[in-house]
Image 1 (cartoon, rainbow, N blue to C red):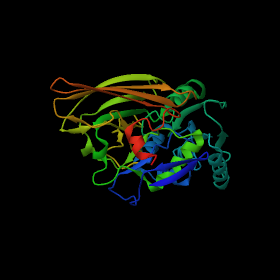
Image 2: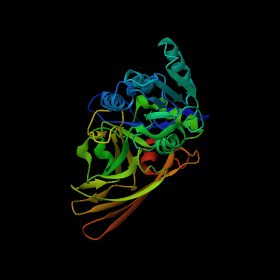
Image 3: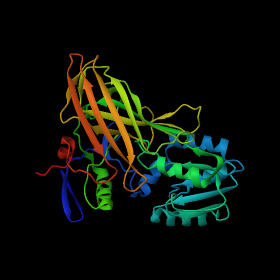
Image 4: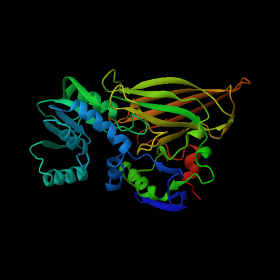
Length: 364
């Protein structure tokens, strides 16, 4: 057990003191949807070969001779620079986090690219520039596909920042879901936050001004823990019918006996329409899985049972990041029904409302 302090409040946090290592799952808060990036988080993205090669391949095909827009460029101006290397004639790079913007400006000067890249500070949904871009590249995809605001941000980019017929990279992002039991995701180890995650947990609470039930990121989750078939529950077609709000109902047939208390979600990502998607559950990438609790205690399941899951996303009060609402009905082969639900707002909402959060943030 450790303590963190946020806005004068001391919180007890259940911590796994075992060092993180390859092959051992780790529990973190989901961090990508909050403005708390630091050099460590940027490095995990810039060194993600599974992710980066897909973005580079798309830029090699789409960028030559075109103006590209890099939204969320980060301190390294990664995709603006990669676009130039792929043959783009000019890059526009937008960054909202002020510290990252100033580091990006220093890097831009050091690389002597001021004539080739225009760097802007602010939200892409507020900035204006001319002429418009031909290609928009934005790595603002979350472990829950839309969690970082990709739908609202890229819908705005299509309407205001891209020429008619302009193209967005990535092409498509999908959140997959399957039934699980949280304890199965952490075999032979405690369900507790990784010690290295505590500064980020504190930063999220400091940014918001109060603690709330953060989304639970499971790094290194095993596909063997799944209890059901998977199904897409959130679909973002960035070059097609892109919706900022959606509601999907999926049936998840149970495939093996066990106990379930929630669902595990993970990202499938296409940077080009016809490629094999990145699969964050089965591939090594900086995107991880997200566990979402549904039942207060594990419910026995067996083949022949099915979970009907409704997964809804609607814009939060900031107009960019989605709030998620899940409702579930577990139908067992013997005719019983078990109902569960979860409200997972981007910020605010309840704290310690579900048993897992009361375990992770004990009061005594």
